[in-house]
Amino acid sequence: MTGDNTLFGSLAHRFFEKLLKEDLRGIDRLAVQEWVDREAAEMLPREGATLLLYGREPERNAFLSRVKNAAWSLVSLLRSNGWEVAHTELELEGDFGPVPVRGKADLVLQRDDEKAIVDLKWSGATRRKELIRNGEDLQLVLYAKLLPPPEQWPHTAYFILEDGKMIARNTAAFKEAIVAGRAGEDHATACQAIFEKMEKTFAWRMDQIRRGALELRTGRTAAELEALYEGQLFDLLEMKTEDARWDDYRTLIGLV
Image (cartoon, rainbow, N blue to C red; front, top):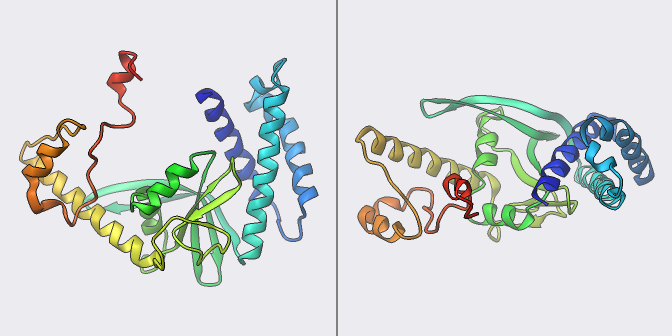
């Protein structure tokens, strides 16, 4: 199942990367469905051949059905909220403190003087809502900071391809979005606050490294570390109190 999700996510990104370069003005649902079928005939033999194997027709049809529904959902969201596609797979670069950073934004939108960055994800709606709710959508916030102009915070959102749903901090950019932020939360204020915590947390950790202090944070050590740091953590990103969700060492010995 994990392998299928990886394949579905990769293929769905390719569909949307190509679709969003098309002229979407006036396109209707039937035209979107026909476009997906045409692209699938060329794309699947090259990039998703396992879905063409004998016995995989149900999975292939279900996947293409979801892509069609998500494609029409996204086109409808852009149209009803007045957004136009400015860029897809946009390379972003800049500095985070003393460190040069680079990234790639899946989708950048323009609406008059406003901009929005949308991260396309195949699945994981619950996880994305939690990230926004907890102020942990750090990748999106960093991309928003790197997107010019530097004095303006663009809107940010996740679009879940499997469900055809937009998840955002509020409804300022997409009135149909699933709201994951706090009531009345302004996106620019929230992004600025998160970014400042990112900077402070980075500086704090770098200072620890320069002093030769290394932290081993797990569910067993979290309470001791919290007591050790006392009041140092209020202005920093929230530290985890459980074991890492993905642990390479546990995977290597077969415990995951």
